[in-house]
Length: 416
Image (tube, rainbow, N blue to C red; front, side, top):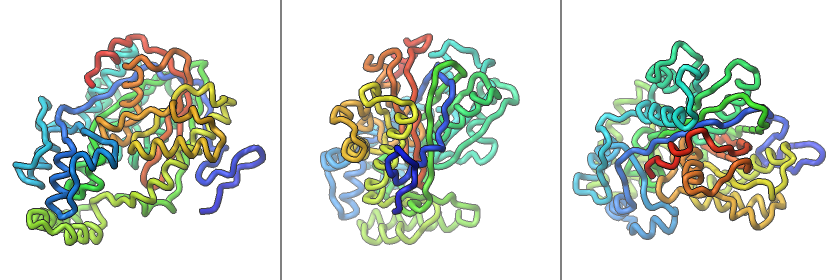
């Protein structure tokens, strides 16, 4: 790929165009997340891989991905049992409701964000939503959350895409606040990728994902923040997904039935061939291409916003990336060091909580940040960079200072 022209004094980035950034007076004043009660361990995906003739142990999967458990809804556990058999191991029921939706999760996350900020629902004048996996075409998750919270007919905008919708949403929130069209913006994200946009039996992909929701409260302030985003559809084939239309429903049902038959017959090669041929309704991922491009896109985004802020490497306390997987997080740090002159200590600033949650798409950064706060590792006034990359390919980063929320006990008491 050709390098992007950036102008004097800027590195020859591959993905980022530096002048597309936003500088605004914005503060993060509240944060919340929600993790469903069910759990899937590596034993489940080891069972599937072995059944399909490509045996992996739970230890093999943990070593390769860095992932140990994923939290999911009761309905997802039911789907896993339907696809792999009622006796499949590694499916642990929790106390969650059987009909829990993405909106249900998002509402809880939003309520927690409000509680942490000590703010009232009535103060929110804009809701921005982001999801890779919701099926609420209209009303949207953003609109439904606003209604469930009891808000009036406020602006409610929904972003749909992959995992970098969260950084795109950060930039939109910043621009709304900078334009003075809102005073307090609620950003909500909710994800259920494993059951909604992939086939459980496609274990090399489905084993990487969990479920959850998150919410941010942002308001205008004198605190300067920096956000940048970009997109490169040339990279689309490495990670893409097409929403099925009504005309696809019958064919999808037939494909699902055939996949289940092939699974129970142990015909892994035939199942993989069927997945490769059918392009609608299932996420497709080229892991090697994603690993090559995704870390660089995030590294460039981090480097660009720090340069815009005039922030030295030592002044940045933490890099809290979208938790795609642990290898991608480490590789992003290596790119910053090797290609952009960051110090070796950069690796110590990387936040990684992928092991216990998996890829939560647009809910991942908030979940990782909450764990960082809960562990008392981040302190008042410290700078943090929140980069993300997602299929499409989209990418970006938000740079801001952390300040404790009004009611920090809300964060400290959230379930792990």
